[in-house]
Length: 128
Image (tube, one colour):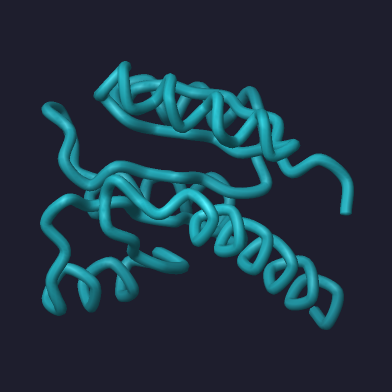
């Protein structure tokens, strides 16, 4: 599989930087931004997957997901939340999130989830 391009959307610069370094080390191409600039960055970078924070000051990940999906309905989104519960997970899936993970995530689990969702999306698109 070629280098997977990840768009990382999070308002926490420290977390974003740390996660970016982990993902780059694992062979991913990473573009990062904060929530308020996410739509414009998405239009310019065409990522394979989005990693999206739920709790941001200007817009939540749940609110941002439909905006991102309007641009690319097939793009998988992994939502990260420090306060994940069943109602949040159900709401996230309803708006089109591929999966919800606890923040901070287990990095190996996140890497596996990124590869899984990109592979599943490609299979789905090939069948269409």
